[in-house]
Length: 531
Image (tube, rainbow, N blue to C red; front, top):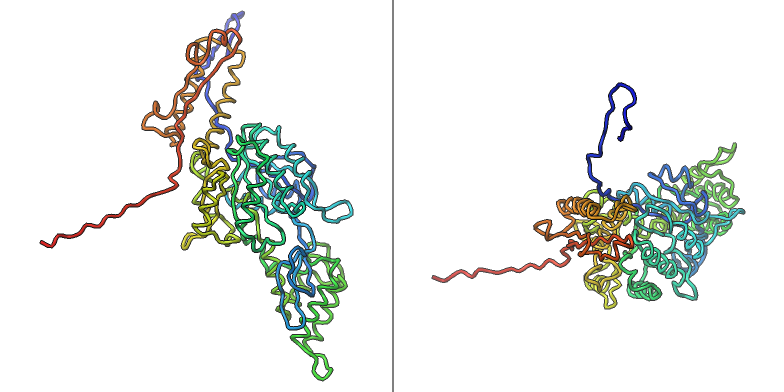
């Protein structure tokens, strides 16, 4: 604290700056989630810290609607599974609405160690008339644009992109969003993107690994080669336990197809409790009022204001499931469908947990995923070899199940797998972390004298920062001299002309830590002598 010349008797303290300038570490795992929400201002990023805060600002999750129908599972008709199959009539469970995964992806994010994040709502679940809207490429791209100049995000996540409809049978809309995310990461230089693999909705429950991965890689053709270091992709989707079949009620059924649903359940009831000589079974008679209430939409949704004389959805569901095993199976199929989640939300949470507990320089791999039952499809070692080491370098990180260990993230590669510099996730992210931290610290030297005094201060500040990282294990080398070097000065990084033009150049050389991906074991057997 500087003082002026004393003018009256008294004590005048002087507090010189005793601490040199320092580098403040930037956040490393602060995601920006982009997608559809129940409420909230469109394309207005907001930082939150919990699901409770999300619900207060953006509302709840989307309740996907289903219905029961006569027929078989047919590709592209929204079928999620067979209810029953008979020689004459088969019944199927079908989805009747759009799907949105942002809300549940956030649940996975927080469950797996996530904390702060940004939310960018690119639209509401439904229009003004209450009709669910489809997920649109342009809406997601508009949300991505809203996050472009946002200060703080270090990870981009768009779970709803994996649900985009196909364009002439191809995942072109998904590819457009993927390429746009990579371009933004490259242009900004301060963030990475976590990708899911688009799966044809007609094959979501049993996707073929080869075609799905090939389509994803082909969709990256429009991305600049230098943008690949900023992208990380995970496969397959996850089977979670977020939705419990026992908690589902008739609120899950589409009101527009209640007649079809009630007719299927009525047939199920007659199959269980058939007429005997034209006389209705007493159990069927007891069920008829409940089936009629279902067909007439004559119940009060759970959470709504009670209506005199009407059952709640839970009461109606309890009465029907107690007597109809087919309805129990239907709820199980609905829960299984809703529990399929793109892995990006969970991975963003694991990145945050890993950075907090081990450091951004540690690979976010070999980690268990909370709230996951299993990967949607199993992956063996031969299949992972193509995912991990493709000829084009577009590596995909596998999520696999191991006996006794559960479901683990089993890969730590970027989409730039053929680059020795940017092949690994932690190398790319650590470099971004160091670059952005140093960049922010250097702002205080803008307009400072371009002299040796400033150069020494800058060098000392950055060396102190890097020494701390080396001591924490972020940089490789048995000594600081082997781990890093910092240069700034006339004759080393600057010419006389640079100094005249006010150009101060700083050069950092870093020895990055790489993961032990391939651990080789050699066994020797000592043969005993006969003597």
